[in-house]
Image (cartoon, rainbow, N blue to C red; front, side, top):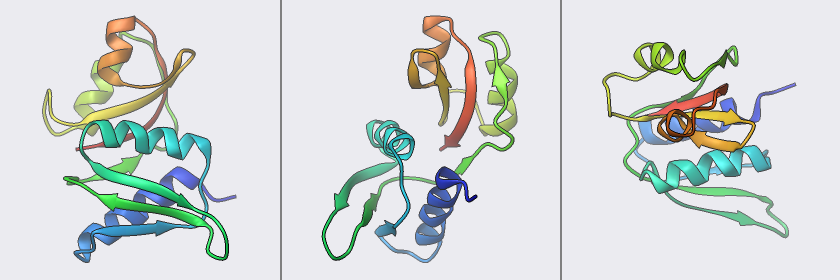
Length: 126
């Protein structure tokens, strides 16, 4: 089984490395669309759309992204452990976002700290 989020974020990074402004992903899920929505609110993805018909896939317009990767293995963290993983995955404080799957839905690390919940680490981007 392929990890859909990991392969999609790798496609985004490959498109960025080759100077492309769009990226096409054939395998996608609702979780990936939620991750892209968070990336869109922070400006890492300009827009995305789902194409149906003869060609079925997800078309992503890249924004100001330096790096985005999935976190493997998917560590489960409490609200107190989030800071430890921030230092591991992000280059500096208040620079970039870490996406966490919580019992209250998918959210960034700032929202998880504000709400006082932990969860499973999905991805990070800056």
